[in-house]
View 1 (cartoon, rainbow, N blue to C red):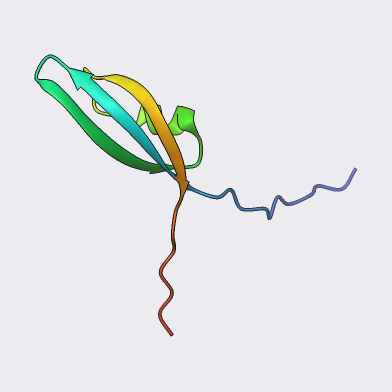
View 2 (view 1 turned 90 degrees about the vertical axis):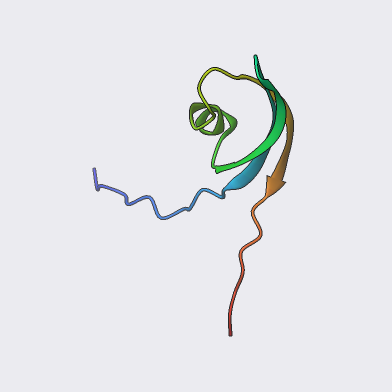
Length: 62
């Protein structure tokens, strides 16, 4: 069987979370492909509450 190359790109999103910790709360934004990936990139010691997913706006210069 021929080996197929995967050429589809996965879009990135801006994931918005409410980060709760002993020091207080913050709204943070993380650019990632999936919510799971965004949670892995979140600050340690925070409880992350999902607040939204936004498309990443790419800037093109021409």
